Image 1 (cartoon, rainbow, N blue to C red):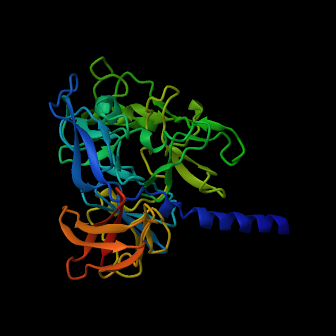
Image 2: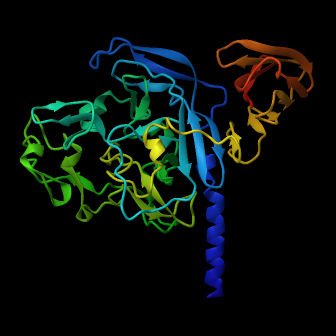
Image 3: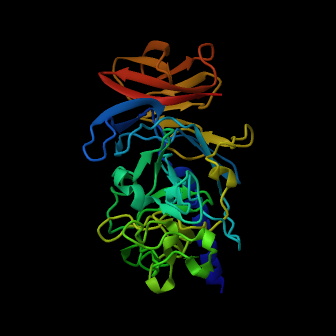
Length: 434
């Protein structure tokens, strides 16, 4: 009994340590600007791609936290976004999202939004829901909202998504992913557990497609996580999944070559008899490398050939209780000015020292005075500070690898880019004024 108690304490301690992944898993901006390929002629069959570099910062630009929440800021863009086929271009969105550090599992579940964001990838790009915002209204697939029969996004427009993140921009320039964020797990072999690729708004992690074959045994083999969803066995659309009958006013079109099975989200249902690895929320309780004591986790779903499989990220409902302000695209969320710790580097710890390319700056954020420890250098180094609009606001030449700069009289609150040039090499780090 005592041995079991000690084991439980050890596992809980491990989980406290490894649960910091909600802080450390984000891909932080280190001075990079977002870049993308745009289909300039808008043709899905004979596209013309041109590469652009944005003035917006890539990836996650800030993470703040207290004992209750983690907040992230991003522009919803990353570097070298893939070749999506639809017209338009990504643009900076100014997102702020909030994630609970202690999850709750309600009896009454929240429907995962069919339109708009349902979670966030680790690079700050939102994950969108299962519909393309069109629905059947009695005569055809019309509207720009949701209805009883909602057009399933991947069958409708999966062919226009890029191959890097399963993503594309919508009309207002909001780049977002619908399925298979390949770049975020492709560097990890399919013979090991997939990394965290994002976080759902209920605070649970989203992993890539591979997990332990035995959910609670980290020594078991690695297997592709199979969805438990399948197409319903129907020829008419007079009821919703799980036996929900409809009135005639809400009937959908009969199954046909024009409206084949899979046209609508409601053409799918989760069945235990499908033998999937994942529950109807598209997750399971399991151990993972980051949570050796166990956690609930969602998984990206693909088939054996790598094709995305419904429901791609999250099922039609959340397992936990999501932050409702996140579902409104983070537009009502502000980060508290007191009681939170913030960082803008890949350290992901409570330390306020920033490290990038072997540059340390502290304190960071500061009131404008920064102590700098530079890489081991020879000869003189040129130090330059730029605003995010590209304007040089400070420069000086130094020898050695430690100095102090003061830009308090030259800049107000915000993010700035420090460049150190030595021996033909350039190092960069972000500075934050508060």
